Image 1 (cartoon, rainbow, N blue to C red):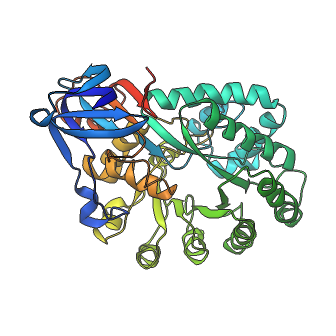
Image 2 (cartoon, one colour):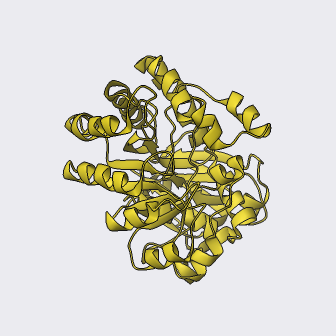
Length: 413
């Protein structure tokens, strides 16, 4: 019995599951299994054994032993919605918002997504990778082990492909598990008519992305002033023809019809949901689409938060992701996202942690390998600093509570 890493004396081993019905929804979302006074063994990059300290075999051998006394061990977060690859920050727009400008006004003046596109088009692929790599290391340190990364700041075929190549490279050159999404339909370039741009997406971009095998998924910003529900359906159906599964930016600023088109096209998830009503909740109840809240964006833009309590009480699942991007959610800290979910969406700590681990894993089709401490799953965990309870993680928002990160069975820091 030789293990690579043995973590001993865990105050709590969080999210330990063997048999599980996914996604977690309704009352099940509020149940979070925890082993107290536990050990966790890792071998060959996978979870090899766990149990209480009383059950630890006497004849164990471990290359590395870690004492987690007074500390909790969590499965790494799975962040199912980010725009991690971008060229530059947009704090000048942050100041405009403080002075009263709306998201739509900033976009109409050439800011917003078009601002990011202009900066990205002027940035080489290597420089874009170096800048994005720093953000990848940042989210690893804050507890994320798997992440979705979208394109959408290129808005030309060449630059969309550049973004996706960078995202793929992050998955190869870091310990992160990366899923990539083509989001050419994020905005319309300033010098093009919308229908001409849609045709470019359909006839040029999607075939090019699929030809280079650069994306797992396709996404559209289904929103007033961007892409209509009908346009969204056309684009994602074309993506499906090339093997790209849909996920939709839905109902962020308005009741955009994004939820309905997500259900119609059998999307994996509909993300944002700041503006969602009873009609959409009822439709989601009859679907397999994962409703995904992005509380960082609602917080940063001063939007209504998704009605998580109503959704959970209706029996829906919910996932929590960061939306890490330069314009509306400049943080990829998933502990902070769980805190916002608790504070502003009235989710319990157990619900928020489940939503940010197993349900986001479901949204990225990673539930068989990520999101819980389960024998044979990828050994992605973080060990906290000493803390009194699981609820302390979202309670102490803004505090640096992570002491050690282990990804793929290797200690990162």
